[in-house]
Image (cartoon, rainbow, N blue to C red; front, side):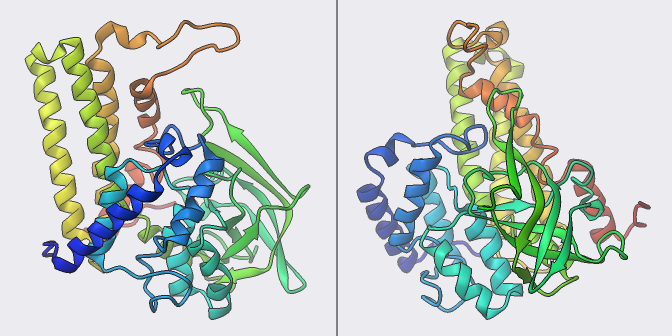
Amino acid sequence: MDFEFGNEDEAFRAEAREWLSGHLVGAYAELAGVGGPGSEHLGAGVRRAWERELGSGGWIGLGWECAEGAYGNRVGSLTQQVVWAEEYARVRAPGRVGHIGENLLAPTLIAAGDEAQRRRFLPAIARGEELWCQGYSEPEAGSDLAGLRTVAVRDGGGYRVSGQKIWTSLAGEADWCFVLARTDGRERRHRGLSFLLVPMDQPGRIEVRPIRQMSGTAEFNEVFFDGARAAHVVGGEGAGWRVAMGLLARERGVSTLVQQIGFAAELAAVIAEAVRCGSLRDPVLREQLVRQWAELQVMRWNALRTLGAAGDAGAPSVAKLLWGGWHQRLGELAMRVRGAAAALGPVDWSARAPYELDALQRLFLFTRADTLYGGSDEIQRNIIAERVLGLPRLER
C-alpha cells in the first residue's frame, strides 16, 4: 500500500495540531503520557472529561465506515486516521478511556447491529459521553473463549445475564459492557452464544472488583453478573461467535501504529537511562538496543503494509506475536541497563506504602503479561497454523 501523505492529509495534520495545541491545556496537559499500560487507572475523571472535549471537536469516529455526520462523527480517510493518531501520540495526549467504544463496539454495530442500535449508541460514543468495557474472558475461558460459562436467559423482551468476566479493563468507569454469553444451553463451544449489550449501572446485579497486580496497580477488574438485565442483542440470538470474532479482527489497525509510537517513546527512555548509567559501554547491551530499534521499524512497516487489507486471516495474529515479544524484551532491557540498581525503588519503602515503582520498573512488570493477554502466543500460533497454513485443527 502506498502511504504517501498528500496535500489534503497535510492540511488535516495542521488542523489536528492546531486543535490539540489549543485544547490540550490545564488539567488535560498535566496527564500527558498517562493512561497507557501500567497507568490505565490514573486520572480517569479528567480523562473522561477529555473524551467529551474530543467529541465536541469531532475527533471521535474518524474510522467509522458510515456516511459523514450520520451519527455525529466526522469521517477521515485511512491516511487521515494515521495522521490523527500520529499527532495525538506526538503530543502525548492522555490515554483514551473511550477507545473500546470507538474502535471496537462502534465498528461492530456498523457491521452487525441494526439501525436502532446504531442510532442509540453511536452518537453517545461520538460525543464522548458513554464509555464501554469488554466482557469476553472468564476464569475458565481466556484464550479458549469458546469455553465460556456466562449464561443469559430470556426475560420478557430481553435477557438476564449471570456469570463472571475477568481482566476487564475500565470496568469501574464504563457505562456499558458488551458481553459474550451462552443463550442456548443445549449447544456447546462456539454455538449458542450471543453478543449482548449490558448497562453497568445495576446495583446488586453487577459487582466490579479491581484486580491488584504485582506492579501495585489495578489495571483490570473482575465483573460478577447476577441476573443483570440486557435489552440489546447484536446480530441476532446465537450469532455471538461470528460477531465477537469480527470485533477481534478490528482490534488491530490504525491503533497498532499509535501503539508503536508509544513504544518508540519507551525505547527512547530506556536508551536515555542506558546513557545515564553508562551501560552503553557494554557492546552486547548496545547491540540489543540497536536490535530493538530495528525491530520496531520492521513492525511499523508491517503495520503499514497490512493496514486496510482485508481477508488476511493471519495478519492480526502475526502483529500480536511481533509486538508482544518485542515489548516484553524492552521491559527486560529497561532493567538490564540499570544493573543491580534496578531492584531499588525511587523512594524509601514504608509500612503505609510497601513499595513504589518508577516508570521503567512498571514497564518491566507490566510487560510480563504482553505474551498472554489479548490471546496468548500459543493461541496466535494455533490460529496461523489452522487458518493460514491449513494444518489440522487442534482437538479440544
